Image (cartoon, rainbow, N blue to C red):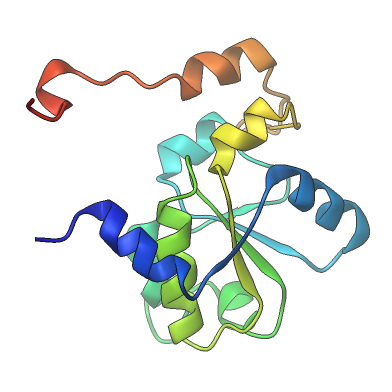
Length: 154
């Protein structure tokens, strides 16, 4: 049986990652970078990187093609554009970037450490209304809260 880490390690053979400080530089230097946040809408609404678009992982494949209710034309037409895929921790984004490469996206990378790392690096985030999210709110939001039944049995 494969674990999530097995899937991620397989995808990492094909996917390039960048750290938050690399993304900060890329945003400063390249106006045409597409920030693709694949978290769930409630996660995106709580806080995200300014100018990112939200396409939840569950509809990514249909969002990347025409003729679906989930089609996102900007994303369909971005196969040659530089794309950085973003999630909470950098795991879902690796899997998504791998799928996107299989779908013909040539310049797609994953944000290593995800939004948690972006927050730890003290980079700006906004909420659904475009208001800045303060560091304390971000730290609280990204602090894991596992219930006992979610923990591996020893």
